[in-house]
Structure formats: C-alpha cells, structure tokens
Image 1 (cartoon, rainbow over the protein chains, first blue to last red):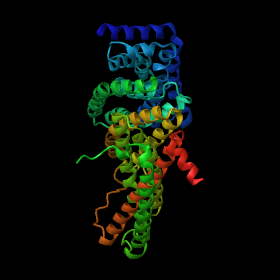
Image 2: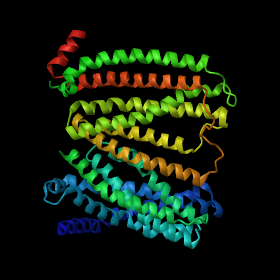
Image 3: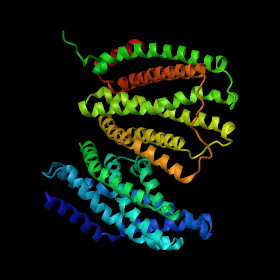
Length: 222
Length: 246
C-alpha cells in the first residue's frame, strides 16, 4: 500500500515539475494579492504591521483555493481517477496522498515565501517565525478541507465560483486561529495556544477529510 | 403485530400525507403566530431599558433558533438519505434548505434592526452575529451545490456530504469566532442579557417559536411535494394527480 501511495505522490510531483507554470501562477497570485493591500490601504508602517498576519492569511486562503480545481480535474479527465477508484489501495489513502502532493506543490511554496512578504510589511522578526509556522500548520488543513469541495464539484459547470462558495465558510476557523497566532504573539500573549489548536485541527482534518473526500469522489464519478 | 416502518418512505404514499400535514401545520402556524404576535405587541409590557424596540425579539429570537435547528434537521435527513439510500430523505433535505436560509436571513435582518436603536449600529462583529452569517453562507453553499448538479440523485448525495461536513464544522466555527471576538474587541457591546424576562415576554417568544416551527414544517412539506412531483413526473401516480388537479 505504501508503495502505491509513494507512487501517487511521485507521479503528482512529476506532473507538476513538468508544468512549473501552474505552480508559479499560484505563488505569484499570492505575492500579488499581498502586495495589493498596502496600495489599497496606504503605506503607514504601523497600520501595515497590525494587518500583516491577516492579509497574508487571507491571501493564502485565496491562493490555495485557486489551486484546488486542479486537484482531481486532470485525473478525472483522462480516466486515471476511475482506475484509482477501482484500485486495491483504499481510496481514502490515495486521496490523502494526492492531498499531500497538492500541498507540497501549492501550499509549501506559500509558506516558504511568506517571510519575505512579512518583511515588506515590516513585521518584527520573531513574529515572522510565528507567521510561517502557523502557515505551515494551517495550509495543509486548507488543502484537506478543499479536497472535499474539489471532489464534490468535480465536473460541474461553474466549478470555480461554486467551489469557493462551498469551501470558504469552512475555512473560517483556520483563518481565525492562523491569523490569531501572529497577532497573539504581537500582543505579548505568545502564539502557542493558536499553534497547538492549528496542530489539533490538522490532525482532525487529516483523519476525517480524506475519507469524506473519498465518499464525495465516489458520488461524483458514479 | 408488525409495523411497516417504511410505508411513508416512498413518494407515492407520502405525497397525499404531506398535503394533509402541510395544511394542518400551516393552519397551526397561522394560529400560533397570530397569538404570539398579539402577546408580543399588546400584552407584553414595555421594556424598562430598551423601550418598544425590544419587541423585535419576538421575531428575532425564534428565527435564530429555527435557523440553527433547521440546519441540524436538514443534515439529519441528508445523512439518513446517504446511509439508507432513500430517495425521499434527500428530497426533504433540499426542501428544508430554503426555509432555513430564510430564517437565518430574517434573524440577521431583524438583529440589525434591533441593533440600530439599542447599540447605535447596524452591525457588530459579535460572535453570534458572525457565526449566524457563516451559517447563512453554509446554507447558500448547500443550495448552490444542489442547483449546479443536474442529476437529482447525485445532487442529493453531494449535498448530504456537504451538510454533514458543515455540521461537524459548526461547533468549530462557533468557538473559533467566539474566541476571536474576545481576543479582538473588548466587551463594548454585550449580547448576553442578564435580566430575567417577564413571564409574558417569555410566553410570547415560545408561542412564536412554535409558530415558526409549524411554518417550517408546512413550508418544507409543500416544497417537498413540488420536488416529488417534479422528480416522479414519469410515474403513474404523478401523472394521474396532475390530470386530476388540472
């Protein structure tokens, strides 16, 4: 079974590596959205410092949602997905592997570039670390929850806008806790509570979301 | 003696029953809302602090209760449909959703109407208001997903998965919003009303809640009847019914 999962992850990463533009588009979207906020709100450093965690988090939410469409779409189009459904590997595990690969492609780059964006907002150094950790724990949750939405909207017309309507309300807790981590650290409370909660959410989602997404996939393909 | 538990699980037998039930519950809803509004507007005393503006709670509080309760009922039917693969359960779930969304909207709207004279603002990012708003989005997502799928069975099942995921998320959303709220703003505005309510106020609210409950049943059943007719339009009983009532 592990060999099959490794194979799924390897295949998805290889597919992404052959088409780097997809990965870069999401990353650039993230960078541009974050850079738009100072232009809209004004360059006051004190204000930017307070809104930085929230802005980065909202942009990460939107960017990871933008990438969700692709999670199952191409596999669905060329019939690979049906083979996965028929295969001996439990579908939940396959979905978990796909979600992990998807996070490596679309979530991890956001985490890695977030410190640079935080510098633009003049965030103090210790907060940059908290922000990056919160993103590292939170973006996998976004991918996991998003997988359910992506599976439900597979092959539907108006997929993108519909997907955002389904998934964004479910993202609210991750946004609140994730952005709260850096804010709590900024106010001297320390972000440990939020980080631990995010970790809890991640474990919870990692257990249940692949299973729910597998059920949704069977419904969509049947 | 054996009871046929599944007698009313087929649209054909449930359709006539739904009509009767809808009429009865509709009538009960009219009576209860009439009595409740009378108590609310004429019997209940004026509030010492809030004046007459408080009277909006006779609509607001029952609507807020129903909005949350109906999501649970919807998820219950959706889960039942997913587990037992019954057609009628999915129809009930999609029949309940618009009523639930309506009550959520009414709760938000009347809440802001009450907030303006009492707090001096239409909207605060209070924990309850925010989670009610997110509940409205969840209802919209459910309805949008079902509307986007042409195949009725797939729409039922996909909606069911979404409703169940939503139910798991509602407590998480509520507590995260509540916590976020206490972290961000001081308690400048508190929704928690400590003073005990006058007995007549409480009676009026309970009667209104019953009225809204009956209305929800009636409206959901009427909508379910339309869905049944639409989906079973090729079956004999549906054709016969349409011919008879034409």
